[in-house]
Image 1 (cartoon, rainbow, N blue to C red):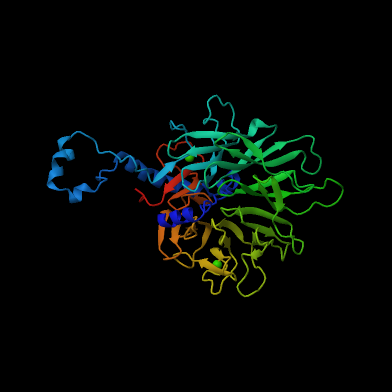
Image 2 (cartoon, rainbow, N blue to C red; image 1 turned 90 degrees about the horizontal axis):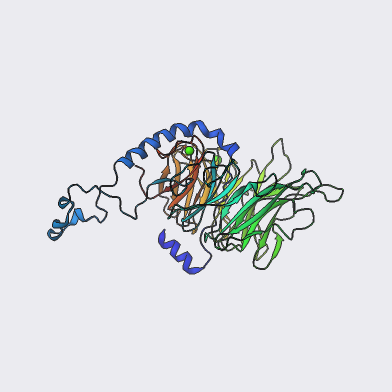
Length: 471
Ligand SMILES: [Ca+2]
Ligand SMILES: [Ca+2]
């Protein structure tokens, strides 16, 4: 996998992972609280044991092959020296929503997004304990430096009247964070009652913040949401809805892409077909060329199917991502969850039984991987095919897929060999997880205490180092 990443990096400077948009909200997350609490207790106990008994194996492996000459320097010369954890060994599970000195949040931290190298993680939090002198709980966007432990707030909701911030996504190169900023502009007319939401991009190097939902067609500049950002931060995709500036109906939500270098903004979602109401939930490839999104279509039999499309911005070609294999109409709604760095593969969940032939769990949910180049769709079955899989996310090279198997938990699958590795037990994380470029680091939010220091009884953001065995 490391090889794959190196190859990707060498081949193109912008081929590492587009970070995932994490849609878990505090509201939805609370519905899974009880199950996580029990699991958290289990994991917390395990983690406690691991802390109490640090690694005792010789990290060099010298004990197994030590030549006689090294015996004189063996630990027996220092019988009182405690075994130490090698400097480069990090815990299998680490809580990220804490300050460098370990201060935990007093309110929920959710929705992590990770840079390609796994070093930086952006997330949202309502905690008041992360910033000295803070008096109230306001929504903030934070960036955690995984290596140094430094936690920085890069945006605070109370910077503008009635404000809130959220939906952070970090660029693959770790330099930029795009997020949604809501506030109340009493001068804004129309059905939004003054509520305005913008997409802002923070440059972590210079500290500058730039608004990117600009240059939109008339009526679309009021409510923007759901940012996705390219590896180098140049392109930002987002959804925007219109409201009638002049008398008349509002128009559908659309997906736009802002080119921060050229200073241009373009509509990328296809013109609505059959009166589709909205395009939302954009994902963008690392180079910004391919943008995937969900299109909501009119109510059919009481349901609102949601189809997934992808647009190649260079050729203009629009791909239907979740098309049923037999050409029949959509049965159920799909949910877009990821895109590979090169834009070739798009991942979605769907309970529709007709995406692929012979779906073993029928209308039970499955993760699907669409190959846009070949026009083929691969279904990801659970270890027990009668169970469900969901929330798929690809690593940068498109080779490894992270998803949740309802029987096994969070799993990393090598799509080439079919081998799977269990990352977390079934109810460990939130609804979504995000991975770094080579699939080594999985970030997620969880209510349960997965480390013994977690005593805040609320959601925290965690990092799971997938290759380290759980204690
Ligand atoms: Ca199925
Ligand atoms: Ca907690």
